[in-house]
Length: 169
Image 1 (cartoon, one colour):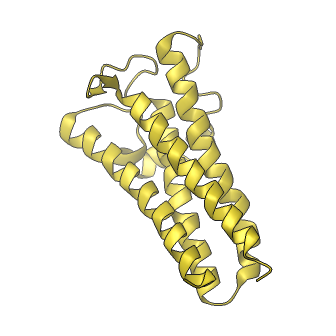
Image 2 (image 1 turned 90 degrees about the vertical axis):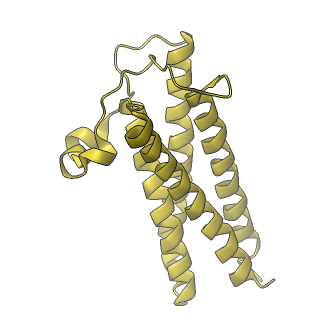
């Protein structure tokens, strides 16, 4: 498999995972009435950013403008890390290990990017952090999402490592 095809496959997997997790969260919110908290909404923002950045990297590579990816890769890595960080923060709040007066360590999107006003069905927070009664197969939903975003971040790291390793070839 050529470098171009392997990177497209990896980045397509990243984009698919981001959009699938975002879609799953929206289905659970609107079909099962699971209300997202501030951190959950913030994780959605990181997933959306990760999916879009993956597609932008594919597009930049496809049109032969690899230099553009130098701007997108750090942002993709940051989006994946922040999704994992926010989800880890949420799990620590829910387990009682971390006491927090604020649900989010930095709820920036609501002040600087009021997406909840433009797309309330996606970015409106109605739940309370640390009060998760939602479970799948006996495990809290936040544990499943932490596993998912950790695997996603691992996939992003692997893709970045492959991109760096194959850049000289």
